[in-house]
Amino acid sequence: MSEAVDSVSKRRTFAIISHPDAGKTTLTEKLLLFGGAIQAAGAVKARGDARRARSDWMKVEQERGISVASSVMTFDFEERVFNLLDTPGHEDFSEDTYRTLTAVDSAVMVIDAAKGIEERTRKLFEVCRLRNVPIITFINKMDREARDSFDILDEIEQALALDVTPATWPIGMGRDFLGCYDLMKDRLALLHRKGRGELPEDGETCEGLDDPKLDAALPAYAAAALREQVEMARGLCPDFDLESYRAGHMTPVFFGSAINNFGVRELLQGIGELAPSPRPQPAESREVLPGEDAVTGFVFKIQANMDPKHRDRIAFVRLASGHFNRGMKLKHVRSQKLLNLHNPVMFLAQDRELAEEAWAGDIIGVPNHGNLRIGDALTEGEDLRFTGIPSFAPEMLQKVRSEDPLKAKHLGRALQQLAEEGAAAVFKPRIGADWIVGVVGPLQFDVMADRIRTEYGIPVVFEPTQLYTARWVAADDPQQLKKFMDGNSIALADDHDGQLVFLARNAWHLGKAEEEFPELRFLKTRESGG
Ligand code: G4P
Image 1 (cartoon, rainbow, N blue to C red):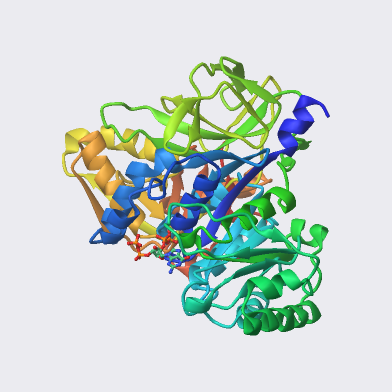
Image 2 (cartoon, rainbow, N blue to C red):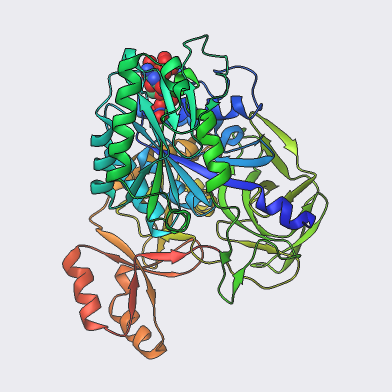
């Protein structure tokens, strides 16, 4: 195998989706523990502190503080390289999550065994479905009183319209949770309730469910229940089908208890063996294949430096192809300028390390002063435009102005920079002096206001508006566009990229514009960058 094929095929770039409290943080920590990236549990983030934070707002602040370090976590396990991309915890930052999901090849869905599918899991799942991201399910907290396993499988199938097949089967639950039987490999793994930092022993291979080893290892009632349940499950659930899983139609289900490190090894092996290696990435002119020689990548996330004295930012670039080496010069397609990547960063658990080399599927952080934006392409010369990294029309709009008129101009610059980072949408109405900020979740307003005050020193006020929504306007016929613009100048604005936006007062206003100008397109999403 050539180095390129080998390097790409052993990479797994994925994210965890879950409802708050299902155990995402705990599982992340345990994955890193198995991957040898951290020495002891409790090192990923200030989970306890974040939980004790008094308000959503404080949690957001804490997350911002730790998110650069934990945005991407790279670790090795059994000859493979795993890149785990973190998604923001709060649902008001769903756009950020969406963009992160554009940079992964698969996802792990964590479900609390007592609660089943919860609201946020469902929403995040829908995002994965839009992009056909294959999903492995981890049913967590089996050491607690859990719902019946068949019930949970049934719920996943019904609620998400997904074929479900168990990869492991739990032996008991709650205080009687003894371990799992690995249905794919015929292995028995038993739970030893040891110290939480210790890794459990590897399971033992069996000759199928009738192996007397099971009777020796388990109490008679548990062995009998296991055999009966597995027989039922095999009758009720379809066999695992790799193609169906990779197409996003089927999910293999692993059971475990993250806090006890249990089921985590099987899950990791599952990701390694089943989840896809880096996928081809769609671009406007063609599909970019991970094995291509030339380096290409796209920016899916921007993180501002937490230190207000430094105006620099880190752009997270998902490599789509090629073999990247530190010091390489890449073309920034939107500006057509060459970018010298002499100090990219790679994210090994908590530390940032200089990335010497990276392959398709890897993420590198590129420090920059604001020239890189979400959706931007970096290449060795080709004018590529990656697609599928959208901005969403905001559903909440507020007016923003500076209390100090002398700082009005600075406010414009601050808003422009924050919009480029993807923190919110910013519109400049063609008539009037105010700016309009648009968000998907209301906490984004608080973050914006706070950052403008602390990072830019501008006394800023946000005020409600009568506006209902924003739509990007696209037209093939310039005359129609002009006619529309002449008649609606009061409702027109430009976004931070200079794209035309229609600000509708209510649903009727939007409907009327669509009816009067059927040739124009009023778009809810727009491709980022270029
Ligand atoms: P999140 O990131 O998805 O929000 O969840 P997190 O990992 O923070 O876990 C939420 C709570 O569930 C934590 O308890 C955590 O210890 C617990 N937990 C996670 N996995 C398991 C498991 O397998 N079994 C059991 N019994 N509990 C689990 P907490 O008391 O809220 O926080 P902490 O003080 O323990 O950190």
